[in-house]
Length: 185
Ligand SMILES: [Zn+2]
Image 1 (cartoon, rainbow, N blue to C red):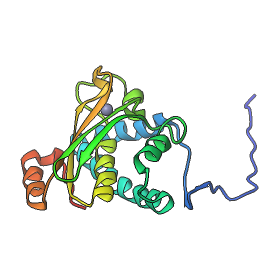
Image 2 (cartoon, protein in one colour):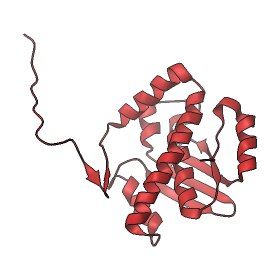
Image 3 (cartoon, rainbow, N blue to C red):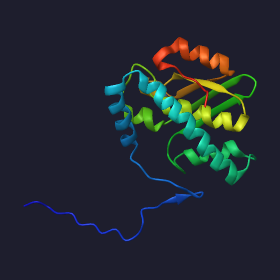
Image 4 (cartoon, rainbow, N blue to C red):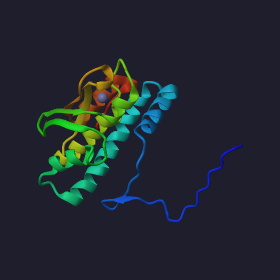
């Protein structure tokens, strides 16, 4: 006998946080999406998720800055994305200067943990996301490269952010071709 499931919605499916609609999603769903895109788009997925991450990072940081202001922002930001908040990652270190960029280190990346073992870094979305966040905070153009990834067996994911101007971003984009990473927005 087929089991039937019945569900009647009573309210609109709206969950809001800080005045914007949010959803709760299984981490594996995001990775399923990434892996499905990799099957068809291959190397282009890296650049696509990186660009999407920049947009997401900028938009969400605007919301958080509006809510919290700049004072004590990084501490609140780290808490917001930790297991006390969204559960995306644990921020281990963030040293980014407007003049020369810097390094961000996270553990427990939801992407790396759900992805499984990989020979290459897999947190392309978070890589772009950090660009968006720090561009919004520092008001400078940046590029980011994931230099260590937990999916490769490292203890952390580590991201190297570099200051760039638009010309340099264009140069890098040509150099890296399909896996280009540009901080232009
Ligand atoms: Zn990673």
